[in-house]
Length: 206
Image (cartoon, rainbow, N blue to C red; front, side):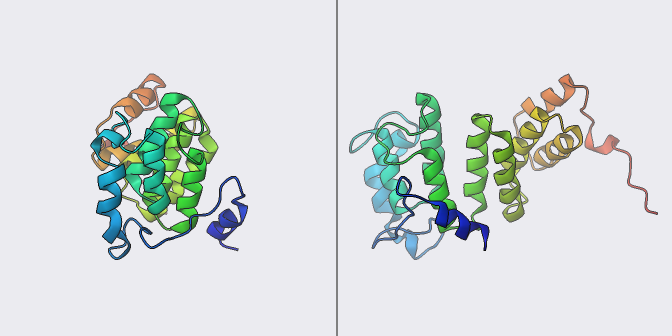
């Protein structure tokens, strides 16, 4: 059975699967996204995305409303994760579901969406659930091999595991794609495991 079907079956009454209504659907689908502007105008303007204040009620309620209509809305998923981390709760105040549930619903609805997997991996990394983070980051990179942030976060997770070759490889990928934050490089340097990409020994064909 495909992994996304297993995930869908695993959703319980505490995390019901997404049900597409008249407005909403896949964030990246042009037909589904026709109602996106209306949803965002009333529930996901910049003051919500930047976690300043809600529009129709609580921040969690407005972000949750957006995700009820567009479950794989990347900026809304990111905002929900940041809100939960800020409040140090697994379920943000005003939200109907846990952050993990929102990600599960998005993955079950759009299993090939690499952006959702990358965001979920970053959230899990923030919770220090490194093995789970790696699983989702690797899935994200299968779909989006050019996702620099996913490579960077994968590198951070590998550093925690002290898997230095994998961490260095991920760092080279991230920085080669232009990722700006120096933290991964600094951690590798502190562990005396950093090498510039052009200083690596060439692979010798046999």
